[in-house]
Image (cartoon, rainbow, N blue to C red; front, side, top):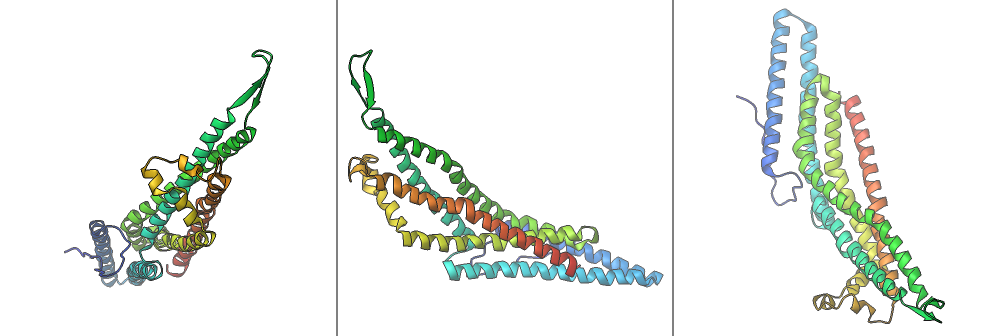
Length: 316
């Protein structure tokens, strides 16, 4: 009868791993691999006793030790995952993947989208007023002078800013996709593959690397977004950006279809509302689109390299 391992039942805790059905399949695969390795070690031990070969007995002792280490590592990974979820719940109110996704959604929808819409409105109005001109003299020999030349400069500046921020908005969407992919694959596929490969001597180093990868991307990488949210939310609150962006798109004006006309209620062209506040918002967008994800992946890759080296050199 094949050995089967069932995932632990955890109640009243954010269990940020894959769906239960996927976990059951992964644990069945690992259980079969454990049973196969135990059967092979049993055959080697019987052969060592039958042929009186000490090297066979030494091989069985070493591989039994490695099998126990693999089981301990598997339990450690799940324990660390549950602990990280509890820590995230106590610190920020939810598991890291939910926090990271909601945080990126806030940056993209409440900051980036509103800033882009405001800049698009600024661009449209600048094009309209910048295209007006006065003509002096006859039709053929006269001179045409722009009525509002400053709007031409504003339109070019805003158009350049919009061209720059397009890849940054796409970066936020890619980060959300990466979090969902990690949540669905780290524990369900990468970790079982690492455990199975680590059981067998020829693939032990590859298994250690996959297990370290699963730990890094399941625990460390999403938790960096919890720290990102706490940092950016505090900066956003101190800068008053949350109130500014909320007032920039008043719900009543949006419902009545008055925007973008409503944003000009403070004057003919309110430079602070239509240009400076969106540019301030883009500062937070660039922070999450460029620096913070690079910091997250750098920490995660460094952790994976260090843990993989430790597991290959100290635990093998």
